Image: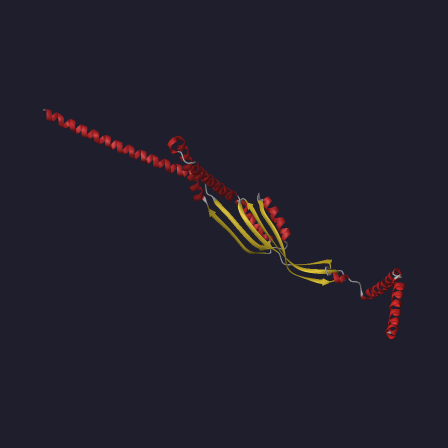
Length: 292
């Protein structure tokens, strides 16, 4: 009788334990699935928040009629399309030059000048194609044109997720007193976070503003200008004038010599006296020798 009662009781206990084990495994699987779904939803949410990060860059090299006028037109076009000129340079170099004498004191300098310009502008991506089309119409012909679109979405998302993990780690370290880092390690960790934030902001700026590099030039221009002759020998008077000046200078020298001699009149009587003395001495010397 007892065995008949114990057998159903033991069977019930085994069945109850099996049901509990099944419920525990099902609950564990349910928790794991929920965590996985939560992570997938979080990743999808971050991806949707960042959106596509398309960076557009373009450059164009072309020939124009006038570099200065084209520069002004491009600047006006950039402003009208809500853009901004961030770099502008105009260079003029002399290819060749020659000096042609026009008169004794002036020459005509003929120079072959080559003029080029470089501009870098930022244009909203929505207006990039319109900008490139209108700029192309300003040139005589295009040497080369290039546009590139790079997708920075994954890099941006990677940096964002890393920053999120680093922020969570900082929050966790603040709660755990034993997890304190050295000041140098903490500073390097924070600086790394700053660099990642700056990179993302730089990417945002590249997405909002497409960078276009323009280089253009015009045909060589021949310029002529009258300038003063820098050869000083060219300013000498003519030969007839030089001769007349020489005669005048000679007369002035002669007059100056006469004046100098007149001022030195005392030299002549003194010289005459010395000459007479020397002459008398020479005459007396032979007479004295004869007497001896």
